[in-house]
Length: 344
Image (tube, rainbow, N blue to C red; front, side, top):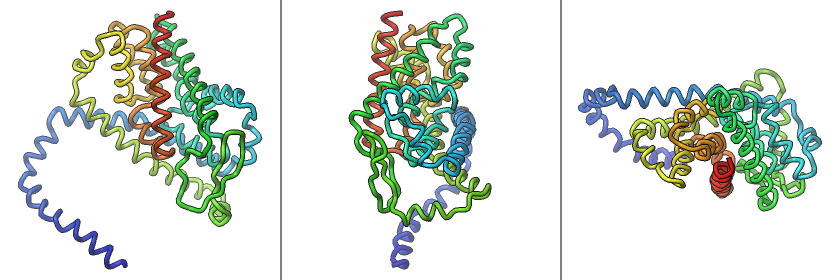
């Protein structure tokens, strides 16, 4: 069996050996292309996106590891409000206590869901936490000092969208949306409208036998950081390519029009994949080009849904759930920002 697998791998490696002389011959041209201005800019943008997001991802996995060791399933169940409306309201305001960027939010919430947190509360926390927190509030005020209504509209719309989607998940999602490991599982009723899927006793025994010391803590954090960071790297690389090879003037030209301006700003937020603590300063550059509604749509959609976070969501939740969640976010952000622009 092992010999057959090695032969199969060899059949793929042999053709690759013919690429070696080709690469050697083209080495000077490849080096010149790599050192061109556009690619230098792409490398700079990629490094900037990664370094901006990596500290928040690291903070998230460290917090996730702390929860793994010190927060029990029983504690999560006791602290979870039984009333769905109360649970959604509490989850929407948790960002004030835990101001974590969207990059670090997903590993934290994944750990809480494994501990027994209902899906609708977890999703509300994922969507509202990166926006409804004091750091983002202060950054938005500094970016728009003469337009406090933008900050108020951003916080209010983010909370409304997150709470609405949380209630939609409570009503329509009846199974655990997490991607579970390939082990035997048992469904356990932990909360109205939510079924927690737990591994059988032989799978849980492996976790319970670990010694809870600092060495095992950092091993767990390192494993989770590597697991999540590969999606961050892929997302940052593709985002850097789009920012480098598609000019901003061409993108802005697509945003002329009452509806196109919303589509452009929301698509721009998705592509840029900025951290929620810094996206307001990018949006301020468009304050003389777009109205209030498109600016708010940019500021709300980006922290909830961008390219890198989509990959991280797909690594955590089932694909069908992520698609439905993405469509709900886009629809509600568009409708809410359009209504704010109409009223204000």
